[in-house]
Image 1 (cartoon, rainbow, N blue to C red):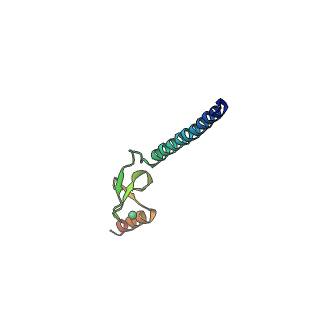
Image 2: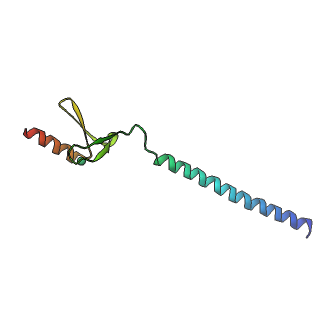
Length: 89
Ligand SMILES: [Zn+2]
């Protein structure tokens, strides 16, 4: 084997290694960002919808102030139902 061939092989190995290492780095970064977006913020407190008994994150819930209490609903529909129920009384 001539020294030139060895040099070419070394360069090829180096390029191959860079491609593999570079690809791995990109993948691990992608996985990290996916993990971050999947984690729910700890401030998301679950509240029970008094109408359908579903647990709703407070930030996404429909809020209603009633007799000094705050009620949380999964949707406007449940909120309206609650209002209608308490209006009749
Ligand atoms: Zn509901």
